[in-house]
Amino acid sequence: MRTTKIRNKQGEELTTKEGVPLVENKLEEGDKFIPIYNNISERVYEYLDSEGKTKKAIKYSIKAIVRDKDGKDHGEVYISLTPGQAKVLQNRVDEGVELNQNMFVAHQYIHPKWGEQIGIGRVGNTKPHKKFEDFETKE
Image 1 (cartoon, one colour):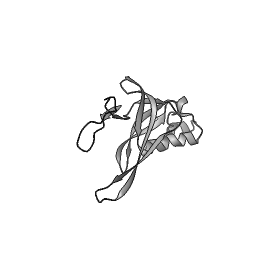
Image 2 (spheres, rainbow, N blue to C red; image 1 turned 135 degrees about the vertical axis):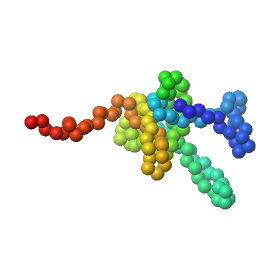
Image 3 (tube, one colour; image 1 turned 90 degrees about the vertical axis):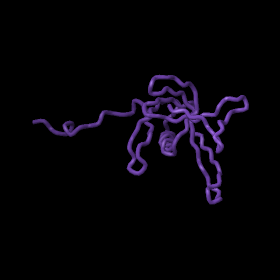
Image 4 (cartoon, rainbow, N blue to C red; image 1 turned 180 degrees about the vertical axis):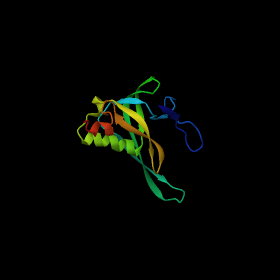
């Protein structure tokens, strides 16, 4: 899991009232997690772009118990999700899957338009791929 400290425009680290640094946690290939809740947090922020127009940004996150690819336990943390990752999890909820009853793993794939991306899949939900030999009849 990749953890980065959150900074403002001036480069200063942001902290809580208690002085704890604010961090953003993102998934890397091989990280496993079990969501705590069955929903995804969605926050909408408004900001001004370089031309002075008001725009909206949507941030997705989920609270989960995380174990990174090296086997290190991170406990309960909030994970920042990309819109694609949030969509995958929301589709699972729409299918009736209880997120907090499943383990998910992050995997890397190549998107034709955006290059390397991190996707999410359920652990134990994959079957071995069939081969041509499986369909050929043996005489």
